Image (cartoon, rainbow, N blue to C red):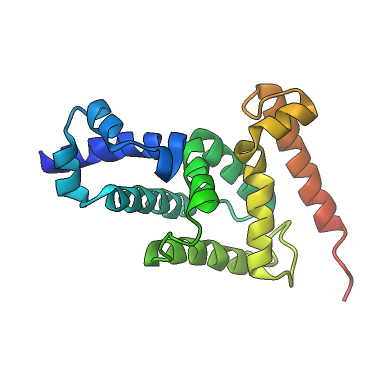
Amino acid sequence: MAKKSKARILDVAVAEFAAHGFAGARVSRIASASSTNKQLIYYYFGSKEGLYQAVLERVYDEVLEAEKAVPRDLEHDLLYWMDFHNAHPYLLRLLEWDGLSRAHATRNGRKPRRMWKASLDRIDKNRGVPGWPPGFHGAQTLIACLALATWPIAFPQVCRQITGLDPDDPRFLRDRRKFIGEFVQNLSSRRPSA
């Protein structure tokens, strides 16, 4: 029973922190929406900070799990992450809030390091696979891939201003998928000669 109760609280807390960030999130709203009480939340998680850290841990677990199914070629890797984050927009929102308001307060724990290490290891293994440029700095390649796959989701208003379409509009997604394919093909065909 306690496991189900904790899971229900975390489900609600993910949405609350994604919508309002740490400062704007309210434990009372989480308690109400999860049909529990604040005392039980504090019993399970110790504090609002403890609940927030549990939410971030859940996000890292989701991304680590998603890492297991990433296609090897660059085009499909980028499309995989674009689709994944379109289906889970709260993940980016949590990370955005965390970066905006708590960048120096957030713990640099084992899970985020494991999450990013898994991505860096994947990039390293994929050198030489179609589309992956050889010799690029692994960390910078990961940052560039994240930007290509997730930027429209992170900044929907800018996409709307530029294209007139929301990033989840089928027309935008069609154009974005086409662009990513063309981008990777162009990148692959312009490899510098040794």
